[in-house]
Length: 109
Length: 483
Image (cartoon, rainbow over the protein chains, first blue to last red):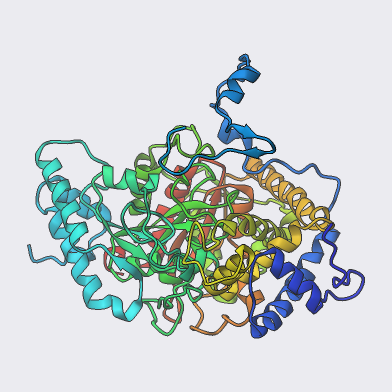
């Protein structure tokens, strides 16, 4: 579980350095020291702003977005027999002990 | 002929072409000349097709001579925002991470335009990955507003709006997630439409926030914009979110009266507007009433949460969509010791600050422990907002608002203040959250800067928006062929 202790939910939102670095790592982003400082400040400000959602009603059901009307011409589900075990394994790589045998490039299997 | 072809509307150019009075090559050539002469001043284009556009124009001329049926804009060249891909042509999305990438296929909207007889002039500048409201986050250069080059053209489709306003293209395609067609249209004094979600295929549109993204047309008149939508709209097998709903006869709608149309002017929007925008919108309301439309009252109680919902949903979807730009599949891989370093370095170098900011917020709100508190809550409130609009449209046929809180701001004025920049979209993003169509129409100027009003409508009722917009555009007092 990714838990960010740096978020102060009771007081004003603040992101500490460790939290910010963890979010950057999860985002696969390398930040310069300057970016870290600036983006940390901006994110805290944005999160403070979005906290106003706490005042919105919570009981409402969330719709599926994009709306399903866009999918109305999909065909009906159709049941078909699946491929058998032998057929599925026929195209699998050959196993040798605990390994999978891979041919050299250009070599016929 | 001696007429400057770039000063004519797209509709007039199409008529001349159809009658054989001017060739597509002449029209395309005139626009390429204007781009060459003026674009250094505005920076509307990232990539101009030049000879490729002329060759495509020759093919359109050949098809006309052969008697082939073409589209509602045949003979008229177009510009494409650089998030819409064209086979064999660079597509950067305004980002360094895609610098040098050549698209291997063509977007459906672009394919329909070319098939309909519209050559592509080039790819227009935009905020990086369409994330911005000023075109200043483009990794290449900012675009300037042709109405005042010290000011921004808006964004993220600022290059497309500037190209149309500067007579460097008769019409252009932009893209919308929270107002990226309408806001630049309003700032540059042109017409811009966000179609209903699903009205235009997103196949070949670089994804930012997939549940809100839509390609949208820009033109100097409502008729030009309607013609452009007529060409690109409709179901596409490549995009399962494109709608099978029939495409309306938008041109026939233009000549119908607005008498009897019920419109609302909600305070929830007016309260965010400066005096000039407020006055322009009230003036537009008076014009509608004078033409026989009926003013009604509506209530949109959940609208106060729209900006917060938009921040969460769009960033969450962006963090997921932009994961593909990793230095392996897209973007030049940076030197690195292992795979994680490759990702960190490539994305760290390739993305600008605004994109990083949005990806990080998206990652944060999707993280376990915060997903319910932020993302699910936002989706619930988004549904409430959509239902507010559904209820409102039982009373009103269209909703009238200012398109922007104010007129175009100065370059550099808001770029270091993200919250001020995000507030630019306060009037436009509710339509993206609800998936409804919305049109911005220029209705005049304030201190020399264009002012736009917005008309929102029910899903797939773009025709009614064009009909209403046709009346409102007469308020500007400008000849849109030569604004």
